[in-house]
Picture 1: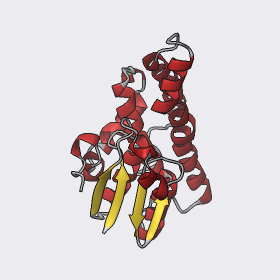
Picture 2: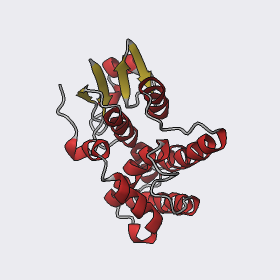
Picture 3: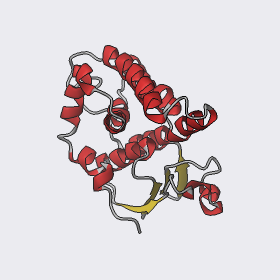
Picture 4: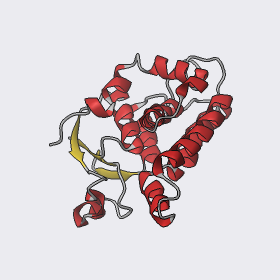
Length: 207
């Protein structure tokens, strides 16, 4: 049995749920509630010393870091998330990293909450999120062309990163009307069952 230790709203967890859906791989859900601090318990730290989610137990392995997990699934389940041609793979990775390595780290809830606390409330969480999500998505929008997906004619690693980021943008009140290409791609992605089933409101119940 594949077991995913994850938080419902975690972007990284959301990504892995999409990839598991694309792999058509049944999995068992174990919730790690970031708000309550479950990620810092000895039990979870034994799974992942970083105290992060997701953690995927699969094929006798315990994997961490969402992009590494997704590439493992891509390689072992032949999902086609990275193109064969090296320039295309580099492009997909650049789009993916623009979200996973540029937007997400600075918009991690723990970072935003620390900033609010350290500034004695002078910098509130919502404006912080809006500022950096908007600037990051503005760059992503400029990186897109007129293809139906983030790159080319099929879903890729970049799209798996984009879906949770659009969800977070809506949560924090970012005006998505300014991103017509992103909205077009996101609408295409919502037609895929694996994407819909990975939504935080549709995740399987915890074991």
